[in-house]
Amino acid sequence: MNKSVFVSLVLLLAGSASAGAQPSPQEQMACRSDAGKFCAEHIGKPPQMNACLKENKTKLSDSCRKVVESRGG
Image 1 (cartoon, one colour):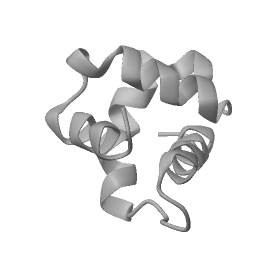
Image 2 (image 1 turned 30 degrees about the vertical axis):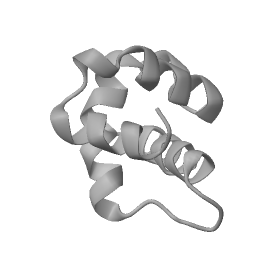
Image 3 (image 1 turned 120 degrees about the horizontal axis):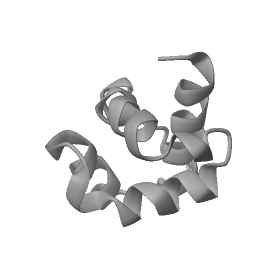
Image 4 (image 1 turned 90 degrees about the vertical axis):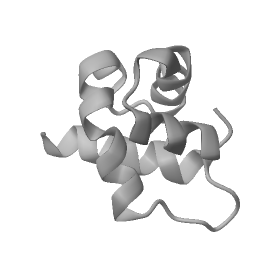
């Protein structure tokens, strides 16, 4: 996975987390593949990435779906 996907996921998860909560490495890892597979066109755009992952929630891996749901998706 390239660095921009990783940075996008960090921003996505940090932006959708409750105040002050940083995404754990496990949460970041859980969605790397799905973000690249379903939402690559939104890399570098956290709001659009978040919306894309929510829209594709039924297609996401179990681990990523749990992360998205735990963060309001």
